Amino acid sequence: MSDNVIHPNIINRPDAASVISSGITLIVLSVVAVAIRFWARRHQNAFYRADDWLTLPALAVNLVLGGMTIWSWKSRSLGYKTPVAPPGVDPLDLMDPRIQIGKKVTFALELLQAISLACTKASLLFFYRRIFYTGLKNTFHWITLGLIVFIILWGITFFFAFMFICGTHTTALWTDIRTINTECKAFLPVEVAFGVTDVAVDLAVFALPFVMVLKLRMSRPKKFATAAIFLLGAFAIAASVMRLVVLINAVITVKKAYQKSKTGANNGTVAAATVWGNIESCATLCTACLLVVYAPIRDLMKRYIWGSARASSYDETISAKSQRMWQLSQAASYGIEGFDDSTTDNVPMVAQVTSTAHKDAPTTTHNQDNESDRESVNQGRINVIRTLEQVSHNL
Image (cartoon, rainbow, N blue to C red):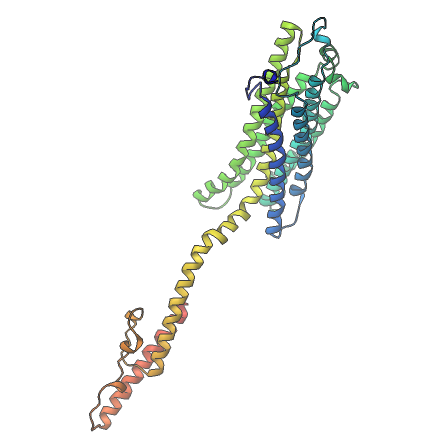
């Protein structure tokens, strides 16, 4: 069966490995991204809002698309060579089950991807309103509101455009080529229109936060650092652009094939549209979720990675200062005269304290000497008390 596998070309002829990988990756990354997003909201003790809830229908659609992609691979449809019409059968009338499965998957992809992308793009706009909207009905308010309405209408329009792309004969899309050419003439123009408007909407949505960041009152380095977070949108834009390239290439390939041999799209062309559709859906949803989880992950890194080193250094400082406070308190209790605070780390306290009470006094004392000693002791106590106050203030 190895000769049935097509030559790998990720642009217009992805092989079976590319097809199954795109399906599995779409499912896994979509689930992980949405799960982390909701965890991040809970970690921040933030309410779930429209930008969060809109990721759930996008996730559900991505799970269906990933499952259908895996089904097409298991059925040896997408990623494998297009079946050839047996002798005596006109290629225009060929109805092979493997070709039909590939076209069903493509139809589901185009139909449901309009919902997935619309929900994800609207989620991004609601997220922008969540962080930038101040309650004033300014230009940002009306632009985001207008884009949200436009994207909802855009998704609904293309959903029904693909639903009725063959008129009321929807099943004609996965029949023979002769029927498709008769009943589904609008398929290729609608495909291209969807791809072009998809790229245009992506550019508008992902450019909006950069405009808002430039208006923030912060230093230029901080502006650049904040804007760099939104560069994640470049992955979604790149995926939508590549999908548009694949669609245009598919249109050219189908037209040439029909003019040359009266055949339609082969399995390689259909597989390319499926793979890049999965990549775009996955990249857009992951981008929308990663923008939310950036702050909580940064906080966790500060707490458990950078914070551990700081905490260790802080504990050592507190320990040293506590020992120093004890030494100073001992010195105060002895009533020192000349306390040397510069060597408390290495020299015992007894060696640092020189008190007149511990000096060898003559056997005969006079009142003048006693008064001098008391003044020295009192002065030493005053010095120690001042030092204690300084240390306690530093702690």
